[in-house]
Structures are given as C-alpha cells and as structure tokens.
Length: 181
Image (cartoon, rainbow, N blue to C red; front, side, top):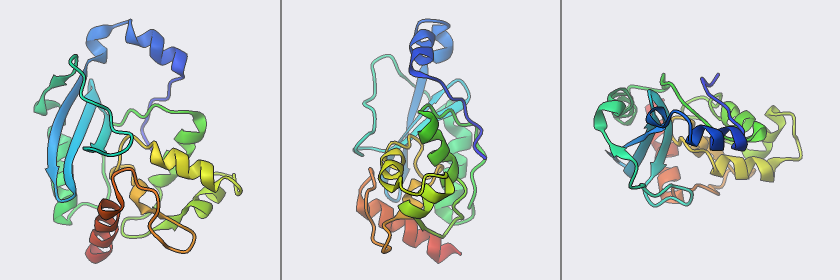
C-alpha cells in the first residue's frame, strides 16, 4: 500500500500560501541508465521522479532549492534498484491526484517486480472494467515513475504503449527487471 497524502485542488491552493517554508520544493538530478531523472520533494516526502524531457515532467522553478541532501535515501535505493539488488522501494511519498488516479497509482505498486500487466487488467483491479483508457491516462500522469512502477503496464496484446518517459526507457526498464528475476 502506498504511504501517501491526498489533497483536493482547493486544499493544494490553500496550502500554497500557508506555511510556505514547509512547502518548499527541493530538487536534485540523478544520473540513471535511462537518462537523467528529476527528483522533487517537499519536507521529507518524495513528490516526483521524472525522466528529464518526459511528457508531464515539470520545469524546474526559480523558487525550487537544489539540495541533494534531501534525496540521500532515494538515490541510495535507486542505486540499489539499478544494480539489480532492490525490487521494492521503501520511501515516504506524497502523491497528489484525484481519487481515481490514487486508486490507479496504488494498484501500480501491487504489480510485482519483473512482471507486467495490461491496462484492461488494471482497470478490473480497481473495479472499473471498462476504464482501460482512463487507467492509461492516470498511469501517464503518475508523478513518481519507477518507484510507482507505471512502466510495468503494457497494451492488451503485450505491446509497449504509452510511457511518458519514452518507449525506449520503458523497454529498458521491463527488460532490466525481467533479467534480474
């Protein structure tokens, strides 16, 4: 189960102006085998892991603070993952999305390392058997890739489709995990 904080849009907007020092976004860049990853956090919670250049990756804002010290545990676990010695992450996450997105993202964490499922099966797991397209959209908006493993979802026939970080990165991650099993 994901350790998450869920907020509505109005709650997020209200919190942007309250307790500003606690809402500072920290960031770091992590060099990985699939390219540079943008890591973001607020306080001690990871809020983003994006392949730089991916479709929904944020731009680094002037107000963000580049501080690698906030990401020591994240980078340690990513190092282990890319070395093939970590199959599950244990990090405090702060995911913000709709109830539907949260259900999809929670189910992503249930897909075992080195395996894949398809969008239709994922839709069934969240009790929305006709919602494969909506599941695909939510999957594409996952703000914490790799750790919330959206790359493990493929098309109904097993084809690689829809990965914000690019299909080459998705193929690499799936192949890498299957070789480590």
